[in-house]
Image (tube, rainbow over all chains, first blue to last red; front, side, top):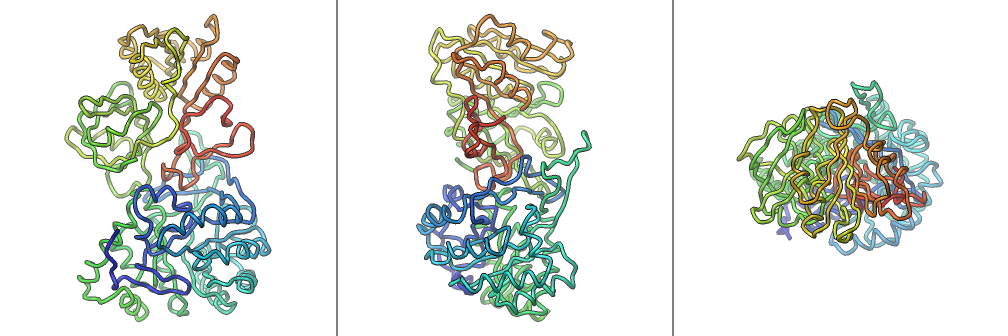
Length: 310
Length: 259
C-alpha cells in the first residue's frame, strides 16, 4: 500500500480520488486480473469495461493489431451484461478502497438508460461514463457521439434516471467545431463531466496478403500515437467549459500526466500502456510527487489551474 | 504470474528466421506446465504490445528457461538482436491450462504434432512425459528444410519416435502432418498439438476418435496477456460461451472451443 499523498488528491463529481490516475475503460476489465499484480486501492478510480444491457460477445478475432507507437482494437464491447456486472463484478471491486467509474454503452438510448438504472444504486459506483464514441460497433456508440442533438438527448435521458454524476466520453472522430458543439450540448443537457478522447478510427493491412489485419477491418487507434490529438482536444474543450475533464489518450508516464493536467484535464485515464507495462498506473502515481516538487506546485489542482490559463 | 527483468543467457539462430532464447531469473521457479507462455516486452518505447511466446524448455536445476520464436517483424527482429547479458522484461508464466502431461500412463500411445513455431511447447511436453517414463511419437511439420528445428532434440529423448514432414518435400517426408497422422495404423490414446489454426482444425477432424484424448494449443493476437482486454477470446464448442486464450488456455481439449 502506498502512502497517502494529500497533494495528489482530486475531488470530482462522484469520484473522491486519492490521486488523479485511473485505468481507462476497456483496458482493465473489472480489475480482477490486475488485482493479482498490485493493490487496486492504490488507484484514484477504476473505469470498468463498457457495459451493455445484455451480455455481448463482441467482434471476430483478430481484434488487436500493433501500429507505430500505438495499437488498433476492435473488441466490440464484449461484456457480461449489466446485471452480471452488478452481481459479480462490482462486489469484487467493492473489496478495494477505490471508486468506480461505470462505463455504459448501448445500441439505443433505452439500453443506456436500462444499464444506468441497473447500476446506479451499486454503492461503489461513483459516477457513470457514457460511451457515445465507440468506433467498433455497428449500432449505437459513435452514432450518438457525432451528433450534438443525439448526444444531448441521450445525456438528458440518462440524467433522469441516474442517482450518480454522469460523464460523457467524447470522440476524436469529429471536426474541431463539432467537438466543441458536442461538449457544449452535453453540458447543457446536464453532463457532470467529460472524458476525452476515445480512440481514433484506423486501419492496418497485411502487406503479405493485402487483407485488413483486424477481422472487423477497422478499429480504434490508441497509445502514444494519439497523445497529441488528445492534448489538442482537451485544450480546445477546456477553453469553452469548466466541466471536469478526465483526459486520456496515449499516456505512458508521469510526465505525460503532467502534460494532460496542464492541457486542462482534472484527472487522467491510462489505457494501452497497461498492456506495455501492467504496473504503469502505480508506477506513475509514485512518480507524480517528484514532478510536483520539480514544478514547485503544491498539488495537482494547481496544474489544472495553470492549464486553464494557457 | 511474475513480471521481472530476465537475463539473456544465450540467443541463437536454430533455423531460418527462427531463434532460441535462453533466459535466467527467479521467474523460472514459477514455470511448471508445458503450454504456458511468457509475455515479452520488446526493447524500445515505440512498440506497445508485448509478444506472447511459448516456453520450449525449463531447467529448474540451473534456473533457466528457453523460448523459441520466429522473426516476423520489427519486434521479433529486436529480440533476435539481444545478446547474452542483456535484460528483457517478461510477464509470466501465463495461461492456466497447459498440456496435461501428468495424465498419460506408461505404455499408452502418446502422439505430439507440431507445426512450425508450434513445435516448442511440444518439446517441453515431451520432456515432461519422458521424465515420467512415458514414450512419445512426434510428427513435426515445416514448410521447407531450412525451417526445421528440434529434430535432433526430440531424437535424443529416450524412446521418442520422430517423423518430419515438409510441405515441399525438401527434407523428411513430403506432405503435411495430417498425411502422417492418416498413415498411422490406429488412433492414439493422447494427442497434443500446436501450430497454425488450419492445421489444428484438420487434426481435430482427422483424430476425432472416441479413444483419443486430444488437446490443441491456440495462438492469437493478444493485448494484455492476462485476461483483461478480451482481445484473444474464442467461442466454446457448444456456442454458449467463450474462453480467453491467454488466461483460460492456451491449451484446450478437442471440441472445447471452436477452432
